[in-house]
Amino acid sequence: MDVDRIVDTALRLIDEVGVKTLSLRMLADALESGTATLYRHLRSKEELLVLVADRILGDVRVPAEQMDGLSWREAATVAADSFYASLRRHPHALPLLAAQVHVGPNGLRVRERLIGLLLSHGFPAGLAGRTYTALGHYVIGLAIQQHGPGTPRPDDQVHLRAYYHSLDRAAYPATSAAADDLTSVPLYEEFRFGLDLLLDGLEQARRALPEGSGGLAGTEPGGSLEGVRPGSVRDD
Image 1 (cartoon, rainbow, N blue to C red):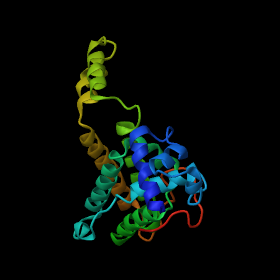
Image 2 (cartoon, helix red, strand yellow):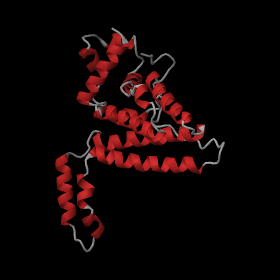
Image 3 (cartoon, rainbow, N blue to C red):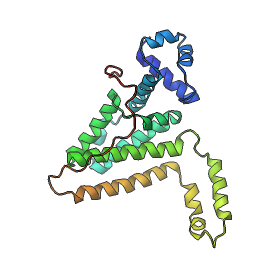
Image 4 (tube, helix red, strand yellow):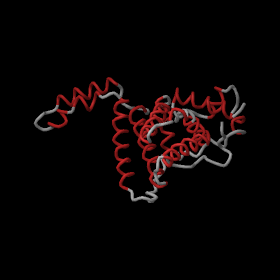
């Protein structure tokens, strides 16, 4: 048994039952093995979840030739689209992406490629890092709101729209007027609308920086480094 098989099986189980329900005993049973075997490869469930999050980031792949000739904005849009699509495939695993700073091989690859792309388009290092952070926060946050555990179903939106239309128009004229747009915009359209607004702002920030400026530092998407240790993640 190798780590790749363990991680792939864990991700499949998370897709089926969620992060909280997954246990090492459940994983061992799915692998037709025992927990003692798992502990020869992993220290804890926390370390396993770090590896699962990095496995999801491994799906974020855009061929280099697809980026050739694109502006920074077009290239950032392609990268954000790929990231969003990867997250949508694993809705039950989305909390993992918000809970960790991604320093596994795939997380490092994604970070290095996007920041390098921005640098190649003339972004100063500080703004390139800040742009990566802003895009990561946006994609992960919206994916959780749209597709994470417990998010509204299409039927819920229908009921919410009816509720908005039932409100007293004199007391809530703005909500009543926007009721349809608040509850019926397709999820991907909502994603692209917000992404375009964010990219507009980043372009303004880029143009406003004095020449030679290093920009500002940001805070990485994700949270804890718990569960990460040297050698706990491997390259493909």
